[in-house]
Image (tube, rainbow, N blue to C red):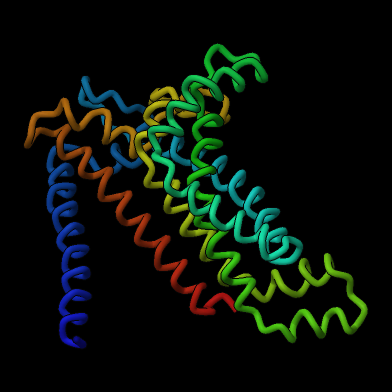
Length: 278
């Protein structure tokens, strides 16, 4: 059994390495056609005209990700504290089940909700020409990150030695002070890793942002305008490219960047979950 598990683990590592190699070999070919500096510092993405500046896509990804992670962290913070310290065992189970159900909601369903309901709300609140903005996309994506952040953070809090809490209460701290100044700092590595993994979930999402962010490859100065993300660009343009063309390899270059970013995020999360952030 030990050797079977070793083989399966090796196959997983091999698959990841082959995926990276495939992306790298195709992505690097793009720079035979196009300047590296123009790609990374170009201010326009107009694929039909052969202009492949990635700055507008990075800007769109930044706004959507920042909005999503801020909303998801704030909402998860209150949910985790309530589940860990205030909810009864029955209520905690109910919350835990519902949080897990949230993670099973298809992203296309959230896209429909954002497209036909939430975008109108954003448009009316901020008096915008369209509700398909980075803010809309970010808020809907936050619902995808919440299950990951809540589940891992809740486990991190429950794994803390009970003596931390007992000692704090014995010294005269109230329940809220114990949570804020003792338990949360003690669980910080696990909580941070949950945020990083939630961020990775947000960064890799495609169909939701494709439906509700407006798909405008412009350099956005606020989250209240339509944007286009890296993932949405690949999804929307891959079906129309000629295999082996400059445009084809440009999309692989974007995929390579996303793979590297996701890899770094997972390394950081693993580092902190093992206590490296203490």
